[in-house]
Each structure stands twice: as C-alpha cells, then as structure tokens.
Image 1 (cartoon, rainbow, N blue to C red):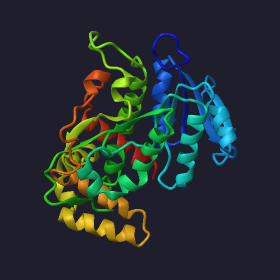
Image 2 (cartoon, rainbow, N blue to C red):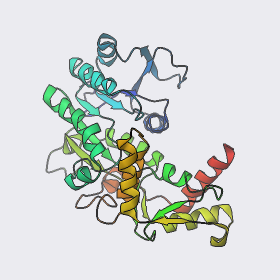
Image 3 (cartoon, rainbow, N blue to C red):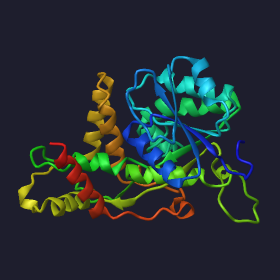
Image 4 (cartoon, one colour):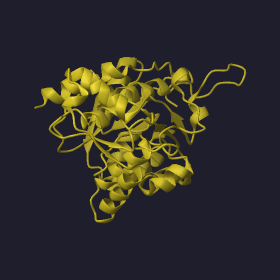
Length: 317
C-alpha cells in the first residue's frame, strides 16, 4: 500500500475518456487526494488534466500493462460493451502481476450478486461474472462491484423527442431505482476515500467491508410515467403533445432476447431495461442496503437531472 495512513492513494483508470470513465475521473480529481494515472491506447487523441499521469500503450501487451500498473493501489476499469473481452482479462492479469490490491472491474449496473437478476438477464452472468472469478482465482487483488442500476441519463435521453415516441412497459407506473452517471462517479471517488480497514469498535465503513462484494448506490426511484412527466415539464409540453407506445414488459424482454440471439447486441438493452422496469426483478436492489448514507451521497432531483438531459440532447441537434 502506497499510503501510510490506511488509505489508497495511487489510482489507475482505464477508459477515462468515455462518458462513465470521464465522470469517475472528474470526481477523483475533485477529491484532491489521489495520484491518478490514466492508461490509454497508443493511438488515442484524448487529452487530460495536466496533473494526471498519462501512460499510453497497447492493451494487448501484458508487459506494458504490468509496467503501467506497478505501485498502484487501485485499478478502475470502465470499458464500452463493444470492447473485446480479452482487454479486461489482460488488465486483470497485469494487475495481479503488478500486485495491485484493489480492482473495480467493469461491473457498473445491475446487482450481479442477485441470482434472480442473473437468471433474468443472463448476459450479466456471461459478461461479468467471469472477470470477478478471474480476480479471485489469481488471488492477489480484491474486487468491488458498483451496483448503480441503469443510468438514468441514458434512459431519459431516449424519451425526450416527440419525433421518436417514447415506449413504456405495461402501464409505466412501477418505480425503479436508477443512478446518474455523475452520481456513479461521486460514489466511486467517495468509496476510494474510505480507509482500507477499520476496527469494529470504530463503526466506520471501510474498503474491506466491500472486498469481493458489491456496493449499492442510486440517485432516486422513479417510474416511466414520472420520467415522461418530468420531460414534459422540461420541454414545456403537455401529455396531449406526446404519443406513448405501451407494450407488455414480458413482450419487451422477449423481443430483446430474440434480437440478441440473432447477433444484434442492442437486444441486450431490451432485456436489461425490461427487467429493470419489471416489478420484483431488477427494479430494486431487493434485500440489499444502499450505501448512499455511508458515502455521503444525496438523493438527486429528478426534474433538475431531466432538464440537464433535455438541454444536452437539444444542444447536440
């Protein structure tokens, strides 16, 4: 451990130029307590804060990755779903070789520890469980999965245009838990400011509390109808200005499975979103304790977030 005060200090992040990685990096910088190294591909043109250490190389090169991770306390991985699976596997191997004690794998989203969710959304098991198992079998690092449910920003941006009528499952009234990308970034930064260990008498949370486990966070609970009503307020429109397509949630999920089976990766989103909107499956972190209080995360305001999303979407046209 590079910090002599029972805290991690040196953090390496992969995928920092992406939407999720960028928000995590932003929050890590705002914490003003870490030495941050960004790993980037050789051909990347992304630029970063001058206080960041930038190491560029091939993700296929274990020697580069191991060298770049030497002395790091934490490896934070954020990768797009289209990235070849060998990339994350190589990062995990290199982290073990470099003796990095903590890894946050590309695990953001639903509760990967819930067997009912894994059964309903089998891609979670196929695409994520293997990496957690790889970390444990190598026996060097410990992982922490950040369960934040689906990102509200992404879900909301698809429901802001009357020219592309929003779709809703069942009657749209079931509230689901969700997080913004920014809240996820804050959660990661505040998680990594925790001491690595604490005594039971202190009663304070530590990283070790979440070793090889998930930590659960959110921004708020909201239904699809409430989300659309917020969009209407942000766009100064009325329900009569919109045409909403309602579809049974099980039909939505089945269509997603069929698309994915045909090789359409976007079908996975239908399965994921459908099970998030479906009552009793992935709509809540059933039986889990939210760590918002322990991390000092405040509940966000739905209307404020929707207004930001609408402005972003309108500005990109």
